[in-house]
Image (cartoon, rainbow, N blue to C red; front, side):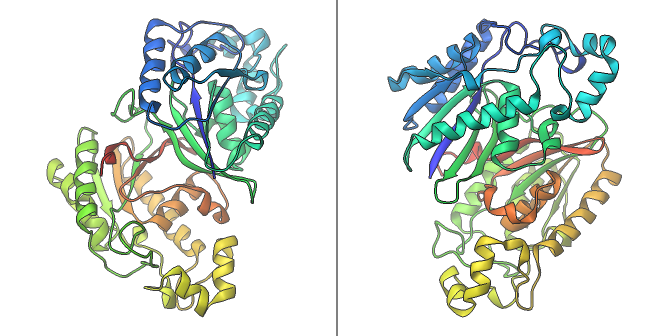
Length: 423
């Protein structure tokens, strides 16, 4: 695998507004502000221990300066690639969203609905930006070998489009992917399949361990995977766990304490967990700190593997060779003998989402599930096909953050593991 770390540049003087006050920056060549330079240095410190092979950057000053702060400790040159430059916003450049909405109301409204389908007056189309950014990243990865780690520094529009394009998300997902300043989004490239999977999205632990603020009437979900058990990789041979009611092992218990410490400052209204003890044990320390009950919900329970439950992958491959091959290549087409399908899991999770939206408007809730359950829920929230579950990282005791925005779910964090460092 080739690891690709995509970084958005640090703050500039044009990155001060939010919402309708935010300005269209694009190819305006603004330098980093003093706090943006410190963000870049903090990112460099975070990555100082990573074995980076090469650093690539947009030609714009704010990206190059960020890249230089990261590359410096590694003694690497910054290789500038025009294909990583930001979007040309034409007549919109330098204006706030409110200004553009007043002057081009119909075009702006259409762009908010479908950014790839609307040309910017005097500027570049988002579709063209997507194509050149994806072509650039694919060309870069083709120059390197498995085991290498590459870093790319670019801009918000580009990092969003890369997330959508590398993971084959629908184009409407552009607005769903949050990309904060100097965040790290990490992808793994498999040269054999020519496909990318995602390890993390929008990791900003080196800047602030707090979660993004929750604004608006929609429910915010913190989706946690349970901690390690004796059947998880790292503790022994991985087995199909499913409905087997395993307890956490010692590492899993330590992970649960880290989850509690990380999430306790958040304003959490309710906690829901799979009925299985490994999920309830993972959230028990957090519930105790907050004084909240852990509410069991069958929608979060692990997939029913039926006759595969308790088998190792090698044992399942021997007993059910064709079905195991199908599980590895097209999991959406598998129904486990005497068990469930991924579609069954998605249906019960959609029921849960509807209940949460009705009961917890404007509130934050914690959900604790399992690897497959969490991956299926991520697919449902991002409108991904179920055969994509293998491309979504979900480590034990990691968490994800989603917030409901009218008719969509925005992903604010994916597979956040910062609280687990050193375990």
